[in-house]
Length: 224
Image (cartoon, rainbow, N blue to C red):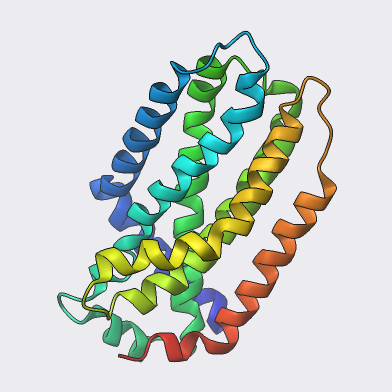
C-alpha cells in the first residue's frame, strides 16, 4: 500500500507541474502536428500510399517528440536537489519511477489522442471502426516508450552531454516497439482491417519485461 500511496502522491505532483505550465504538452503537440501536416503534402490522400506510409510517419514523429518530452523528466529535479529529497521521503525508490513513467505515458497518450483527428483528416484514413483497438495500441506503445525512456532519462540526467545522450540511447532501444506499433497501426488502418495479435503480444511483453527490470534495478539508476 505504501508503494501505491507514494506513487499516487508523486504522480499528482508530476501532473500538477505539467498542467500548470503545459510546456511539454504544447511543445510535443506542435512538433508532431508540424510533421504530420508537412508529410501529408507528399502523399495523395486518395491512394493506398497513405495507408502504407502514414502509420510509420506517425510513430516516427512520436519517437523524436518523446525524446523532447522525456529529456526534462529528471532534469527538473536537479536545481534544488529535489531527487534526493524524494528518495528520502519514500520507502521504495520504485515509486519515483512508477510515478514519472505513469505521467509520461499519460502525456504521450493524451497527445496521440488529440492528434488522431488531424492524422485522420490529413491522410484520409477512417479510424472510428477500429478506434478501441487503436487506443489499445496507443496505450501499450506509450507505456513501453515511457518505461524505457524514463529509465534512460535517469541515466542521462547525470551525464555531461545529456541532450545528446538520451536520443542516442533511445533510438536503438525503442526501435522494436516502434516497428511493432507501426505494423499494428497499419493493420488496423488497412482497407480490410484486422487485429494484429502478434504485435499486441510483443508490446505487452516489452512493457512487462522492462517494467520488471526497472523494479529490480531502479534503485541503482537513481544513484548519482
